Image (cartoon, rainbow, N blue to C red; front, side):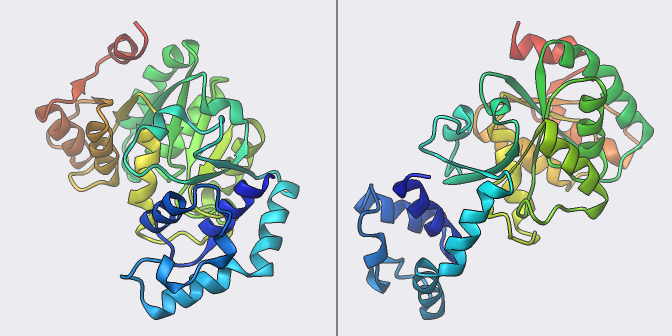
Length: 289
């Protein structure tokens, strides 16, 4: 790992540091030559004294240096926004992650067509049947399925892509060492071997509630389109759809029974202008045809 990449990774590990603070530090010191000379005045004036102290302490932590050294031994790759492997479409989004931590096949990040497929953690047979109907043709066209490794539709999307000999990427909320939910640990291990798992959080980060909506911007950000299969009216999947809209990406929605709570979300998206899809061609014609 070159010196700049190590320094940026170390900065990214500092507890309490935010995207804007890293941006300001890089703006003032693009090569991070003076990173170890940072003081409280170089950090945000809005940071509390406790947070400022924590950041400065972490900058000089040998423990964090050792954690970073261990990543390579555990097959975890560090991809900064300045690296060629960084997803090109994600770089075009608002406040893209400075770093992605990845385990698996990095070639899946670029030179492929990506489709985000998300939906409710609670779903019905209709949702799974739709995935089984849409995916064979999508996989045949080499579309890489991107989802959030959550239970429900996300799990069905990853598993179906694997079963059909396709490729899939899981974007998780916490770090790679803390797969959530636990029921998907076996699936995650399979994906780390033959597919890809990525996170914007350092591997030892335990997932917290606020990280889930944040990771949704990455799911939509690396894809040209987002397919909402089933979702309740306040589902996190709609957050993913909103991110896609904000970035000018395609949004596809599966129409459903108006009496089903799991179809309220997609039906509302269709009312708002998302494309109603009845067949794989409805998606493919927007992505590649």
